[in-house]
Image 1 (cartoon, rainbow, N blue to C red):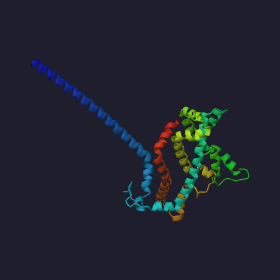
Image 2 (cartoon, one colour; image 1 turned 30 degrees about the vertical axis):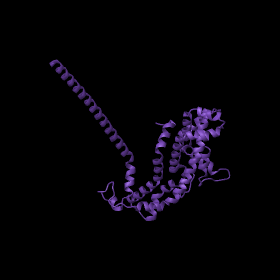
Image 3 (cartoon, rainbow, N blue to C red; image 1 turned 90 degrees about the horizontal axis):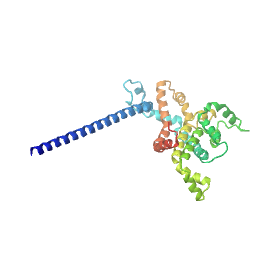
Image 4 (cartoon, rainbow, N blue to C red; image 1 turned 180 degrees about the vertical axis):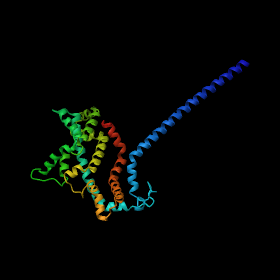
Length: 319
């Protein structure tokens, strides 16, 4: 009887030791997971702060009053916040009118680039034709070639476009975009080419068996499956056209039609119109003007960020 009791006690002790060991391993595993998660959070917050701190500083300073700017005790949160910087910036920039003309210009170019670049990318991905590799090499050259190297030929081409002088108009940008040579068009062709190459050919074969033509297959089937790339190219095109000053200056476009051109002379306009000579105060107005300019782009990206990231991953240009 005593042996049975000793055996039971020993077994109970072994169970308790095993339970204790399991609890200890579980506690160590949870601790490691917590420490790793805390480390990741600290690193991500630190990196995010480094990236976003200039933007945070601009947003904060754009609400500073004159007294806040010269108060050493005020660093991030204004003591006497004011909207005067934004009210003045909206008036000087003619924000509503110029934003409308800018978005009309950018959206028109974006739509043309989507059609042209997707067609060219689909052709490179699905068809064989003479000099295909050579022509695709030219597309790659378009991506890496600095635009400064072709600035003079472009200027002279549209300065003496037959009997016409197309400078001071947006026509040169539309001509270049229609012929697949617009701003970053080479990159967009590459994105569509990579995406279409990743789609199974059985999709097209099934459409051809059903009697669909090539253009119908492209527009109704292939392009419908390429929506991640369409959204990616749309955002890239809209943002780069929106921020472009190189082509706008080269073709001497009217500063009263593009926000990117208007913002470049914003500080001098504020100084001359309101007789503000203090550079510290002028910075506050500049911050407000910059925030007004990047606001539309930020809204677009926030609304489409998931589709944008998915399109970049599936296009094969990660890293």
